[in-house]
Image (cartoon, rainbow, N blue to C red; front, side, top):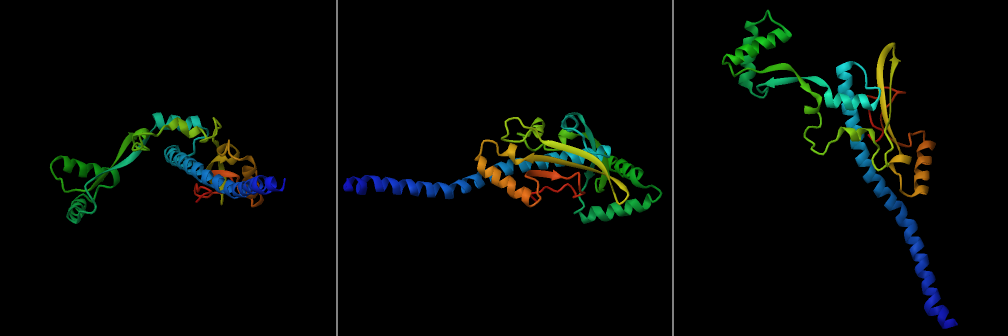
Length: 231
């Protein structure tokens, strides 16, 4: 019996205790690694929402109230961009353009740029010109990312269909109406399927320090220049 205890049972107990110790140490590490990986994906999506919302506001003067409006804006909307002809790093072109402008001192703004473009078309290729140009949103934003799908913006990644919580409001700040927006991804959705107790601990820690238990960009409570809570 003593040999059985010494050679078989005690080693099994030691192995079991070692496994429990390893698991208790490794579990938070594994959780934090997956938390970081999921957060990186979520942050990119929230940044995309912010980029599109800021562009929407620059166009219409307010933020898109719902995700459908934001997605439709990307698919069908148009924005004005500035098309530049010539390089401002070309000192000769800069001096020449300034000299030509002095001869057109009666013209300002768009009229001046149109006249410079007329001269450019007639053969003066040594001019620097900035002209407004109407273009499709989808041809301007995210067009260098072949895997970008605007429909994905409505969904929290890894959340099995849970949608981003987005809110907009117009709030008075120092007597001025200021449009605000926020987009949220709660940890309970973003970390779905991960260790439940670790999620409970993370959410409790965030709530105890009066922080949103998840990732979010912007705020309808405070004008924060559309910052993300990871920044």
